[in-house]
Image 1: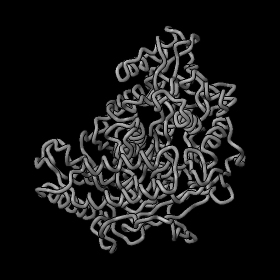
Image 2: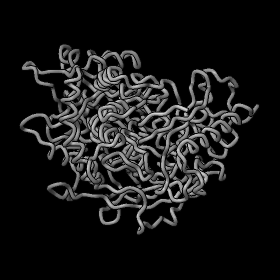
Image 3: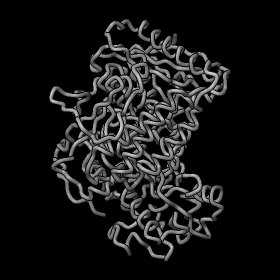
Image 4: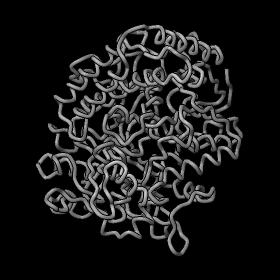
Length: 610
């Protein structure tokens, strides 16, 4: 068994910042990650980091833009914590050596992004995430933070109390991908989940193959509620053939969207009369798909993004990486012709319920980054707000887990005594586990001693691995995963209809039943990626179901969540978060109110227009 004060699961932006913060507090900290840190998906972030750095800007304006962009489903304490902390974190990155793009006078450059009232997006060319990862990994190496590289965490070591709020997380169970060894990792102070989003639940996504929602799925099965899972962001500019992201920075620099008729449709068809291409992402994605659906798309699939008018010098200075992506994946020279783009799954606004300090309702368990939901993004994330979330809330989780007093959190976690569950969702099938053995906690309250808890979960995970490897026939996980991705892309996409959501739930139930008979084709222990992908597929199923249940429950149109039968935002009824608890394999759905009271003001919901 390995032992540290703080364990950080995942080595991307949030994980690296959490580890550095915990180490700053004097904790013995280690990162356990299935990928080398600089291969984490944070490296694919292109656009930039929002921070109020200029005299003419303010964190208050940034907070207002964030809450408005979230369609008033963000919690004000989270939005204000983000916007107050972002300038300091950006300056810290600069001091650590991050190579931000700069103006002629030496100041860090900032550019406009969708939904912002001020050009506050700092950037490093079109490779901001790449530079962010390398800058923070340098700091981790400098500080001697131990990294368990290519160790796949598949289970949380949580006590088995009946009430999740009485449970404690004492560590994790992980498999050394190089050898197949399954080992326990004990955390004396806390475990911080930073494993990224569930993009692989969809087949057209900007997300890496490794983005399978592991942290959120493990926390969910251990008893932590998932929050606002229905809110999935579809980025308006992805390459049609691969889903590769084309940065919002292209539009921030002045890129223009055209339909097949050569119309600048964001203005000419009235989708965003003031902001045009720089409306928020949900607005632009719906506009593009409407153009395609109404017959004004190229090849009935995509629209054109044109940056030729920016000039070669400006493009090479600020967007050179975009030229390579368009050439490599679509055979298009962005200096000479427009690029084909269409919406693709990009980001999960929802995730593990946490407070401003990253704490969950389970003692000793934290989360930060895309797998967490502090609710700073609400129903729609603004471009440029993901990277500050990683560093601001990653740092807070690391500090708190290591013992720093950050004050009492304003955002509560876990069901309250007044919580009422939604009795009838109208789901066509029963969601959740096939049988009791699918749970991650045996609820009898007997396991409390930390080392025994970890060893118990190691034994259970070893049994699962042995069973998967010993089966000589069954269903291959890749078939199940492909079916899940197909139904999610077809039925739980930008435009959502009740009949399609129910069809997706039926398909997911079939996928869950088929997964019960899954087997691993590769019987070896060494670098058995087939085994890893098989375990990941279970996480994909659980989160795909959570996304779809939330989408079926929320009968309104808010942010990224569009419902054909409910074409209005219903503040009186739906100004609340959708919560989903695993409940030992019988998911319970309930709600909690949005907090719109901030430090100095209340964010009153208004019509959201651009």
